[in-house]
Image 1 (tube, rainbow, N blue to C red):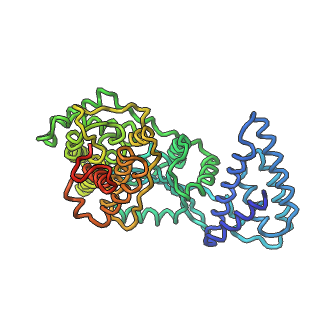
Image 2: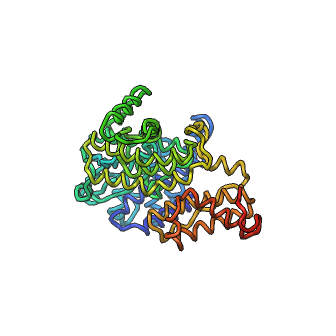
Image 3: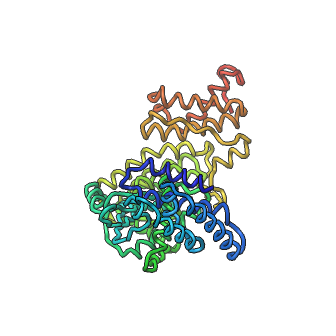
Length: 469
């Protein structure tokens, strides 16, 4: 096992510039130690866990203390400075013993896990999609930052952690990019924000995090838990009561932005507010192209069963609400326009989700049903559809294909039989790639039915000219 740790550390260092070696060594060993903890002492009473951990690290200290190669000394140094209290003492003793006999110790090895947090800033996107907490380690020889991105659209989880350049360069990049607000916070405040978001991440069975998060998250936790000051918990996010949500809807309907909207406007706006408050962080008045995508392409089609008449009203209502919210929050005009344009991009998802026969009014699905399409597939015994290849498509084409191909696949499988589902999927993909002008001549929701009709005639399941019921 130690050989595996040593090989992992060697490979991680080889892939990084020498200026980052002390940070990469700390991150590599912290990650390996966390993985060992999950594998070797994940269960049992606390005293049993501590005994196994102490025995393992004492044995590791003995083996590494007897070796004389520089690579094992790098590993021993990293372990002695990152392993938790249960195993730290024997590793530190072995490290001090070897340090007396080492001929030449590279300067970077002495800096492993020796950095001090000097300041912290929070950079928040003006759309409220997320925020970055930047931890500044102002070391003379190896200055760097640890940047933590928290995604508000996925429940305020930590989605990315990476090592960045010195803080002045980070600030310069944020200021040149614009569209962010920047504030300085106490290190304890920054630690509280991050630890709360890490707790949200851990609540996911399979959180959508980056590879850098997997590599640097253990380093981040180690550094935050060793701060001299206790982390300051962020204030509890206020909840909006049903009455407060209705008041927001009433305020919108009384504004000029609601003029000329269909009668379903109040219901649609209330759904937007419920989604923004209950499933994202930042509040109902947040104006964001990403939030538009989540609402139109994912949440609404899966939570609401409605016909094309109801869904056809959604884009205009959402656009008006975005204008109203942007006006109330005094958001920049270009940011509002970006979100409004996103409505047109993701409207095909609603068109394809509309049912054929009118239902009179929309039906809100039970909260236990997270995916309407999955429920349909389970009934038909089709399983999950293949993922369309979106390479080479622009954003609008990719959105259209992502909606059209699975729906054509589903309808063909249910109507004609499972053997015909792959052909329907292929036809949908060819339409988007080879005949976009033809595709634009009809509403997207009609194309799955047209594809099934074509397959039925091609395979002589119905006679020439006969309708497909």
